[in-house]
Length: 202
Length: 202
DNA sequence: AAACATAAGTATCGATCGGTACTGAATGAC
DNA sequence: GTCATTCAGTACCGATCGATACTTATGTTT
Image 1 (tube, protein in one colour):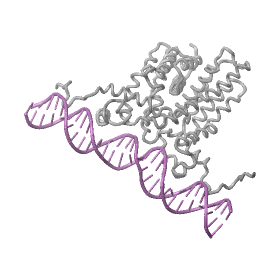
Image 2 (image 1 turned 30 degrees about the vertical axis):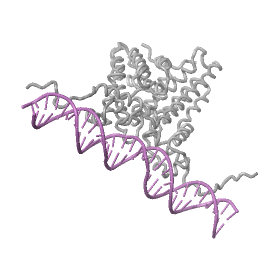
Image 3 (image 1 turned 120 degrees about the vertical axis):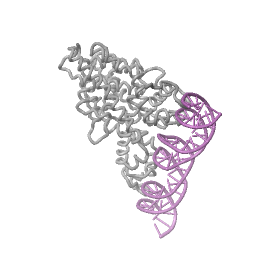
Image 4 (image 1 turned 120 degrees about the horizontal axis):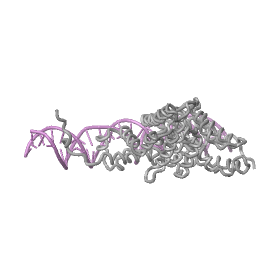
């Protein structure tokens, strides 16, 4: 049985979905889920409401897809950090990546995973919960990595890998809040360095 | 000339403004500025829209007054911490207070000064800016205190009091984000302890 | 008592919210 | 060509947004 690969029937889409999603992501990043209206979103995406609903579902689905794109784009420093050879290098890369992503020129200040929907009314509850899950997944990723570090003898077995993971995420979240308030990359890198000065030595 | 002290002319107010403001503060704290509708607010306050506008101005004014009340209430640990005798004790009290305030049973999780309006659309810009200012004032308070600690020889003059202040605020902000996501008081106190382990000794 | 001042309640304002029929345009299958 | 299928645009939906006239109620002052 051959599966037809290309040339779907019907009128072809007149815009680039990736490009549109990228722009939607930035609007959510800058204004938050509740602060971003469909008018804001679609005008930034360069498409009509109808096209948005056809291509992405609804506002909530669009937000989820924007968050996925954010994870694989601006927030990709997270998984990348876990590939560093030692726990200390993981921590350093994670906080450094967080500082850079939160203060990237040309992008909104802060972190979509924090300011996208930290507190919300009823209509934004699902978006808020999605971000809670997102942040917890980040902690889980670091937790797994530090458990491995303990197994490998890279971290003392006295240490709690879960605490180390939560500590890093907490500092990264704080960095995002400060960045959203206008703190500079230099300021925040110094903060990150200081946060790492408490890291357990070898 | 005698100034009449009591019994203002006209029909007396039928509700307690402090009580109403307290309830409004909690709604903003839980749902954020944009997520809190006037219906949410006034029904929690137990008054009508008209009474709210007469007593507080408008939604933005109400938010500012709720923030003031928050500063003097749940967030009063801030100024209290600066009265501790040593810089280390200030830092310990500040982070400990932040953990307790962000995980206070019977209150919304997190911090109004963070989740009240971290990112917003046009209508919430002023609220967002008010919180940026609020957080910066917190940093300034700590900054002044640590400058004094340097003067008093309590902190080495090699250290940057501004950095120490921003570091503490950053960690406190991260704690607030984590609390908003459901992290427990115990978890966050351990995080705070770890953040303090990097504090410059004597 | 009458006159006056303020609060509370009702009913609503125009604007905007997220979401959707409905209509015409553009393509592939036949 | 003709038909089927999908996309794009207009115009609009009911609901809700923050905010306000306007009326009624409840006090003090005289």
